[in-house]
Length: 87
Image (cartoon, rainbow, N blue to C red):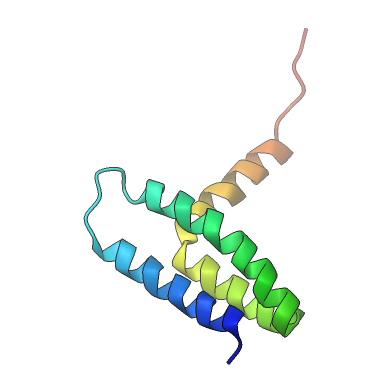
């Protein structure tokens, strides 16, 4: 197992442990930290193991952080359906 995959497994373990600890802000602060660490880690996994393994790690990360993905998809959909301002 490569170093990048070991780090990705540790990231997933940290995400699961962070989800078990109670939070006042519904875990959003932890989600921001996990996303900030996960994006470069995903690039490292893809660079070291190829695009298919990178895609699998991306799907695994999206399953752990599903609410940021849901809100991002809603935001993108809202941008696509926004009407131009009338004068």
